[in-house]
Length: 360
Image (tube, rainbow, N blue to C red):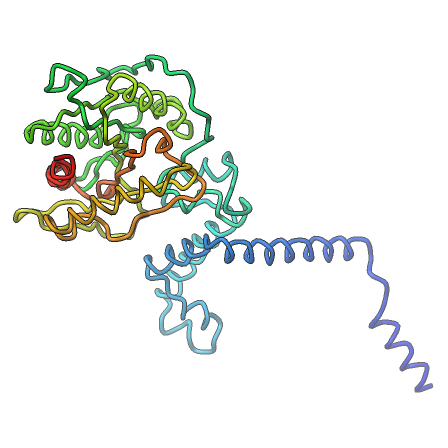
């Protein structure tokens, strides 16, 4: 009798799974394997650091997640626990889908972009190495006069009468970027927004210092944000063709950060100015030359205006940002959407002083 009971219990413990149970087990195993492989890939490529940086910058309460469910923990700090759960939900969505609920751009980029940093469902489809999404990298095309969107006036007249005097070419891949530090929107889709004004300020400041500069106002991100670089490459190539003496080809941007970050400024001549971040795309075959130029400018800037440049260059492993067209090609981020236009303009005026010293 005892033996029969024993064998009966053993048979119940090791009964054959049903089809549904096998299917659930198989799907769970596949998901677990993908998760482990994806995390391993992310750790190896370094893209996981962006997610950790995202959490730490948001002051994410890791200890609350660890202590979730501990006896007596929830009741005394109910509001904090609820906030933690909301943060965990948002972070989980970012990790699993690549969608940052604070950044509407990720609603689209996560699903329609090829994820060089890892699987879409792990959240690295938003190209964390890239401050701005580059879109498909196309080979240089035959230069043609680019179409101008409404409100765009093409090239602004340079101070010098002859193209041989033009040393700095300026354009904006993302013309719609705006500054919300004064309460306005952070983007004006289809328009030349504040970031274009910053480009104009840089051009004017250079001309006052005797440096020939030209600024192209063609809008590149009106029809399709993700293909903006496929459009701006035409403008960049045309600038170099029309002004072969250009030494510096500058793509002027402002950075974008999720809500919760505070703006950063530096004091320039007694006034607040935005920091300048230099971005280098390593898909460019001669990126080391562009990097050397960036470091030289940063050194001059640190001597003249300490803190003007972000001390760390931002590198994008899978992008080139049109920098393959010129050894003097740089992408410059003038602050973030949290800065004001005045702060960005002051940074542009200070940069003009740095560029003039390098060119001279």
